[in-house]
Image 1: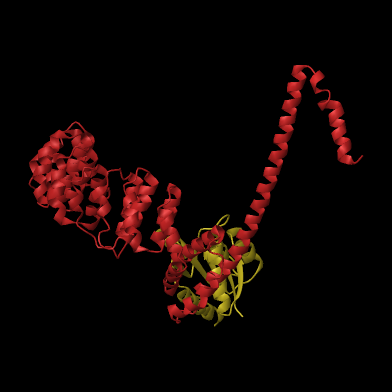
Image 2: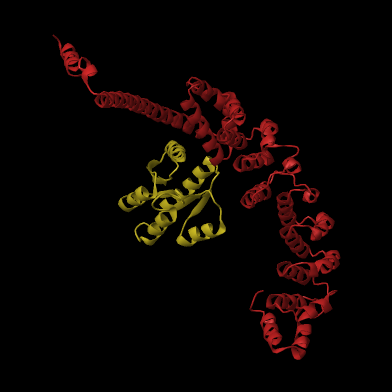
Length: 124
Length: 381
């Protein structure tokens, strides 16, 4: 079973994402702030990480940067969730190695399909 | 003799029975002490009750939040292929069973529906909008809009705005010119989204100022809303409210509304210099050649800041009709005006760069340095 980490500070969104991905058959781990997420990323191995950009303590970009600079973890797909589609933010994300950007508001089913695709790509 | 009788007897022997023999100052002091003790006890009891009720409320909030979180998360992840009515039929009875009259439950449910509505696309917002209506939460929003407290009004307007309850537009329009700036702003932003037929009607009646930062917010809302039918903003350029004129000028500029040319030219004689400056800027951007003579006509009546804008616009229009005027401006005492005039000459399609080179041969040393600067294409104006 593929293991996914969701890092999102908005509890309500975190719950919806957690429910959806569990329903899709993934093993889901959650973090409600950046620090928690970073701790989990350092101690565990995930098949995919879904993280919000703006979070307390540690932002999504820092988590992304950490993963992509770690030789053992850099192949983990990272999907960034953002409420702002600012060009420079998107560029920064992609230049740091983000695999995809999800803009709020988004369609949960579309997200589900994207996640499936990235996990498949990573397995083969 | 029991415990209480012993205490009362002690108080009686020590104070009450002997009270009349005490001097006045002691009696007064004892009364004050007694008052303080009673007040303190009352205060403790009050704090105790408050804490207990707050604890109870917190427990209630925690319980209902958990319950509603789970319920709505299940609504959100329900299979998209299902019919909306089917999803509603599944969840509505369960939500309806909750004590919706309890303000805690009502507030949590409203906030969470709004959050999900804002963050998801697809069937989710559609289902949530139906639920919001069926659970009569829209009626609560209407009540909030008509509440006396302005903060509650704003809350109601935000709810109506997020849930796109268009029939509340008529109730919201009256606040679009409210003296409370925050309420006014919220109402204007919501009205644009909610009024299906005349979303800019509030501009007709706006007497209060639309603050600069609020103009930025409205500009964003208007320019990013793809469903909005954009009118010709020139019809508000005669508004007595300068801030309405300013907002409309920014929108005319953004939407490149050439039909506003005549009205924009008229604003060159407006009493507000900010409006004059913006009008000149638009004339330049829209390259309205007909307006050149009007700008030339008012050039000497204005301060340097506006003169610079006029030179800049003449440069953008670059018709070549005012080449002599521009050449004379390079002998102005102000360096910025000299530079702007040089850039305008450079833009002349009739070989502007060569004209500048010609001037270079005959002009002052200072002007020669400036012309070198202007002719250097690596330096952007």
